[in-house]
Image 1 (tube, one colour):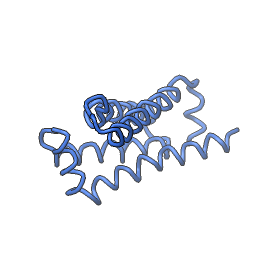
Image 2: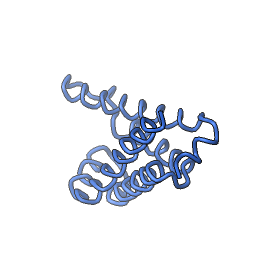
Image 3: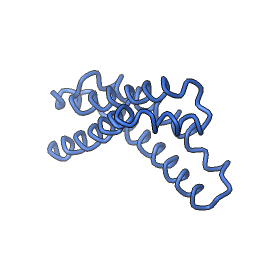
Image 4: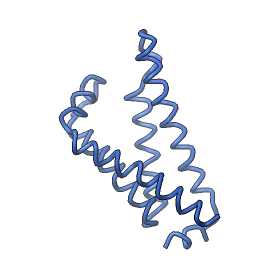
Length: 128
């Protein structure tokens, strides 16, 4: 079971690390998308969210400040879900479906991260 937990950490942490890096690698495109969603100071918001995902993903992957990393990711996921993926405001069916999928994905990932916090404290020691 420890190997499965390790694999899960690699997949989960790696997902957020890669997503965070993409925010910086595609900063202009991500900024345009954020502006289209009405994000104030969109460039700074993209950089901040990229940093949140990068640091949170590294924390999960490496087992460093895991609780803080998880809270950082959960805050990002909830803000992104409710600000960036407001499917209920979109009339066009395909766009609405895409935004709904991203909204639900963000909430599911937040739920999975919160479950990690409910594990007994010794699991943190297995991360080292």
